[in-house]
Image: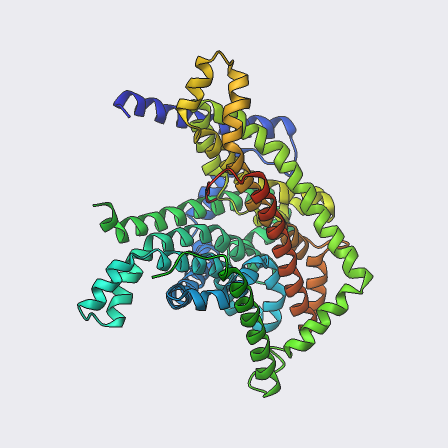
Amino acid sequence: MTAVERLQDVALRVAALVGLYLFWWFATSRADSLFFPEPTDVLPAVWDDWLTDGDTWTENIAPSVVRIFYGFLLAAVVSVALGVAIGRSRRVSEYVEPIVHFVRSIPPPALLPLFLILFGIGDTQKVVLIAVGVFPPILLNTIDGVRSVDALQLDTAAAYQISRWDRITKVMIPSASPKIFAGLRISMSIAVILMVISELLAATDGLGFRILQASRDFAYVDLWAGLVVLGILGIVLNAGLSMLEHRVLRWTRS
Amino acid sequence: MTAPRSRLSVPTAWTRGAIGVLVLFALAEAMTRAEFVTPAYLPPASSIVGETVGLLGDGEFWDALGSTMWATLLGLLRAVVIAIPLGVVLGLSKRAYRASVTIVELLRPVPSVALIPLATLVYGRGTAMKVFVVTYACIWPLLFNTFYGMRSVDPVAVDTARAFGLGRVKTAVRVNLPSAAPFIFTGLKIASAVALILAISAEIVGGGASGLGIEMVEARAVSDLQRSYAYTLISGVIGLIVYVVLEFVEGRLFAWNTSSEVES
């Protein structure tokens, strides 16, 4: 892309955003419906009542982000370990793959009522729900990644008498990591969905809880502001994951 | 390391898969029978399967299933009608594509389940609410994959068609659309899984008269663990059926195409 083209591209994107805003403003002011407040009310609320409000950070944003973090971490650790074990042997994967595919086919929110019985309404249930929901895509991608590791590299490492542990951690996992990250990226939106739904059903804090409260109080501006904040959170989480990926996978682009 | 799959290995894969499932079943059964795990967490696997089979003879279950699947299908259809034509038209122009991707990237991260409280206020607690939420969620994977499909067309093929005197519309229909079709189908596969997820979520959170999610919440309300497991099992079977059917159709429709995976 030349400099001019790049400038045109930015201008186009800015124009698209302005267009979106104008559409939102025009549609809501014409509709004049309580359910659909105007952006001139919603956006200031996003800033004043959410992003610059200390209580919102401690009672809504932080608990939600922490749940996603632990759910993700749990799923990533378990599925990378399992994925390495399964991916190394065609035979083992033939034994367990139908089970993994079945677990993947369960719509994750369907696990929520069950987990509420098993783990109560606290953080454990929410973290486990997120972990189980994001686990299948990460596992399947890890298996895929481990399978595509260059056999020659592994044989070479073995011939040089590099220990099995080092072969796994220094050869296998690094070369599977682009695939592992692909699994993490797919999982991020599932994690956010499960975080929200678990907070909508039984919670005392978190973003979903605040949105539910707003809808019960018919506080439509706060409700819409919450949706905007969730969108921002999604963008920030994805950007964070991309940055991590960029750092970790820097060596693959040499 | 791994030999290419021969024709012979397909039956072994099936047998091994079946053995894996049976071993898991036996293990779960043995653990509960030996009181390794208290029945308060995991009832014996045989009783869960028994409960699941019992549900199949229950009229209420079929009503609930019908209600959920109806909302799933309706929402998916609406998303298809909205997203695919939009994706095709916007995907034809590079500028329109860039502008709309910017908007999509902004709207897509809003998790669709967060719309359920608003949707129940606007649409009440019925099919209309479920269909709205399902539609919203399904639009994004369909739109994204249609975009990618339209942009991934071989420029030489387009130039050739134009050189042979095909008009803009004809080129779009004869060249762009067929090459985008496998991508669009990938979008449909993702969207159908999303549709089922959102229909059940809308029932669990929003409530209503009938649906699998409602049955699940009711089982939870009386702490009926066995029934909760049974519903989880059934929802997995439904998800699996949807997946297998779509894979089969894809294989039939796009046997000529090697691979076109776009994540969303």
